[in-house]
Image 1 (spheres, rainbow, N blue to C red):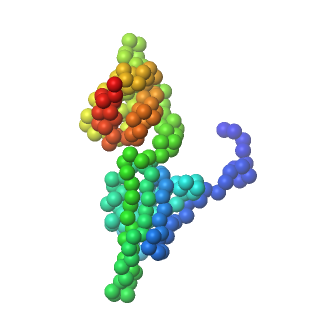
Image 2: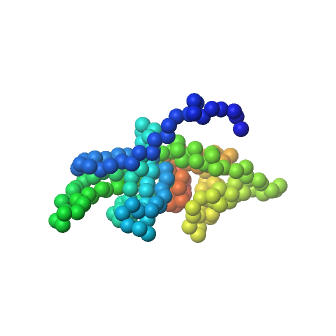
Image 3: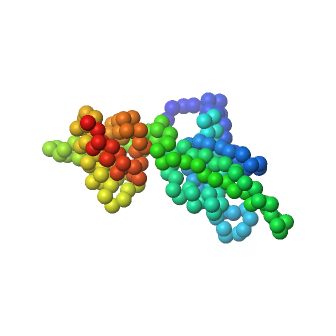
Length: 203
């Protein structure tokens, strides 16, 4: 490991909680992490905490609740998302007011730079047996590391062959990058069918 004094060379990583106080308060960024922590209000309960990386390169946390948690089940890491306080309903019983925080996202709007960085950091060399089809071998390896449905391996194999045929991609490792650049679709398992469809439509 390179010798370094991180206290001199590094910088403070901010992970401040974002509070919604007034209607219109909002924040957006790349969805980078989530975790469950113990509730401060009820022993034994757990609370989801979602972390986003803002355009200002700050890490901000948003505490979940039922409506946010339901929405976040449909969001994948790497998507650019927003949270906005749209309504406050005063409590009739003297408790906390109800704050309606909505989650705004689009599966096609992602932080491609962040996604690519995750692939680079977690990538392992692909070992191809002598005589094996390099496209098939590489795509099979990639399929192991992607959250998938039952038929994702077949989809990845078809995508790899079409990427070579339609985009001229000879290096299997560059298939995700080239597909995202040409098709403008995020390389996530839920989009594999759309990616395959778009490749087939290319002339």
